[in-house]
Length: 477
Image (tube, rainbow, N blue to C red; front, side, top):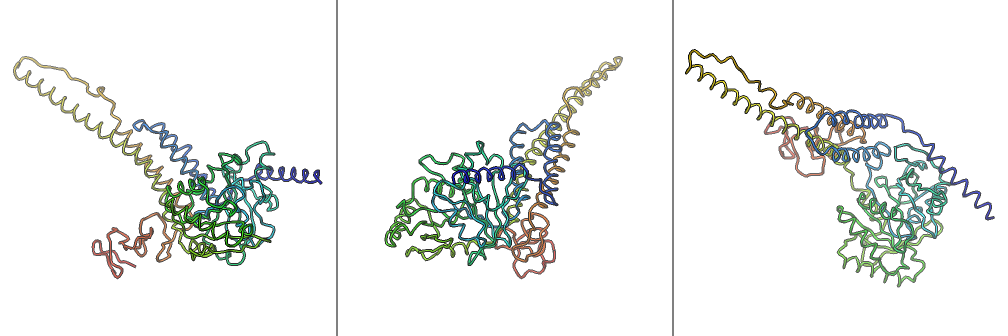
């Protein structure tokens, strides 16, 4: 039996590694746009940065553009991540995170790895879909499909047997699968199954970093705590506080394995957790206890909170994801990088202009003195001139060329970003928005959720019943 298990484990390892190593470059319009962005960064920007000498922080600018490139690559690889609300499912080792998500799947073949040992080793993005598909992503953007039966075997133990860091060649995985029951309606949510962590030293520092990163990038958090712990641990509180420091998060606490305690004990554990969080100043949306048996979830509410886990998820599902805002964030970051270059170049142009003015003034003064001498001594003719051109290097024309190049690269990069992002729509009228304008060109509504309506041309605030802009006369649809 042991030999059979070892043989199966070896086969799983080989299939997994073969899938990742055989991952292919994505194809299609988004992949083409991403390759064009890469070319612009590696060729056009590199040429520009080597020619432009006024800006002194090329390293910082390149670092920012590389980070933008990385984020844009994720958008092109898996657009759904940027059109859905990210709900991170987190907690310590064996806290029941994967078991909870497994209850959502309608396909009995689709399961996240579950074991008494630490299991979730790679962050996994889970979304409801009409069919089942598990996709591995490599750092350079290639993709490969993993059979669900192999994916369910990925855990820390398998990774250790590989003798190398699997996350270095497969940093994350996406799972698209049909959801069952009430969870099938959660079409606006993307769950992230994060690696567990353990204060006793199981897992790795990489697990803690991945978990922290996932929490910071999520809009909501489901934090799992085993009722056997009796209370929420200090490490859990540290994670949650760090996540809250990165922005507003909606937090829901799930007490797992509630079948291992009496109902009264479970209520007491939930009460202690609620009080500890309150003392820590951490606001939560709700808390409940769950039991997972036979792939089904049974939930027990904490009587002091009226919100169930499903109720919490339904609220997150109703929140509209502002894709325009996410797109604009990246284009603004690109614009900020090149505005630093443009500011430096413009200062150099102004510096050159001031020097030219000084030289011109000195030349006029010199010629004036020569003329005065010639008038005083009429028989003296001074056939003499000073070449002022070598006093300083006039870089004005070069600077203007670099300014034009910076503007072209900036505009091209921003255009690619807009094209890579999923279809952008006005949150009010629903019409297509072709750029990242802060307000809709069709109805004047703010695309960032502001209540104040604005003119689509000049941007001044207008009333809801205004037909024509009082400032520029533009007709308001």
